[in-house]
Amino acid sequence: MSNIKPNEVKRRNGNPGKRPLPDPNKVIALPKLSEPPAYLSKSAKQTWVEIIQTAPWVATTDGRALQELCEKTELKKELQEKLRKSDYVLYTDKGYAYANPLFGMLSTTTTEIVKLLSMLGLTPVDRTKMGVAEVKVRSKIEELLAMKNDQ
Image (cartoon, rainbow, N blue to C red; front, side, top):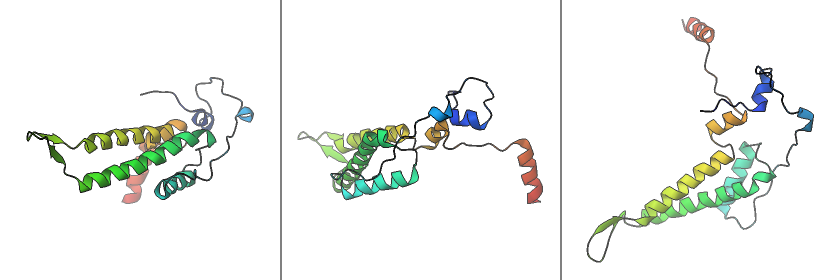
């Protein structure tokens, strides 16, 4: 696990390590994404809009990754539907059983989706690394106060 903290966290904490931070006046705010590409399916466009609305840090430079995420999400839905309509176990002409290849395709697509979610900072761990969200453990004093209030 890395001990590297985002600059946002260092600024908020008063930069306890006293390492030089970039000048905040020189930080470039990237333009936000807006409309999804026209060729995406209705479902993929809905995914695009949901992410844009809930993740304000996703910018135009993330457009390709977001597009890829929307397409992979749509592909996963299609694979799941095909698998529901198919047999989980298939047989060769000689009668040997083997797993439906859709399982492997579904697994690969899911792995790719998780990677894209991570790249875009859409998982709790990645948001914490970016300084967008932090998991705060209650201090001993906070625990004692909570116990006192519960009584």
